[in-house]
Image 1 (tube, rainbow, N blue to C red):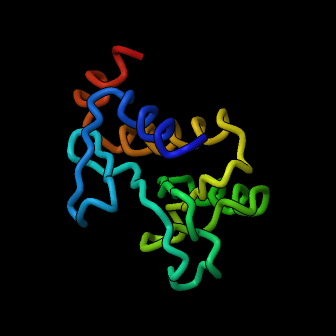
Image 2 (tube, rainbow, N blue to C red; image 1 turned 135 degrees about the vertical axis):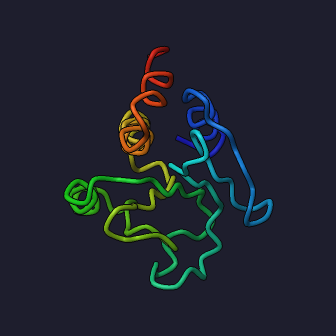
Length: 130
């Protein structure tokens, strides 16, 4: 999955809006004003990443803490969330090593984790189209 496919997939989620509060280099994706993903190009100088992100687009995604650790063990391109709570967020490096369906599943899970914490009325309005 490349950055264009990822962005398209993120924006196709119900009521998702893209913001750029950190400047044009970091897209933030929110549902009902709650962030569930970011997308940015790695520069290679990100502290603690050993240059893994250099030249690759990366997505920060919310994740169940136990699953977050398992995904990091399975995929070298999944690391603790860069600039995020490392217990509840993963950074997924879009280097082509993770199957597109798996990246989509991670995006879906992030979206659903955020939606599940919303009031029931908001949840119902978001999940009706699904």
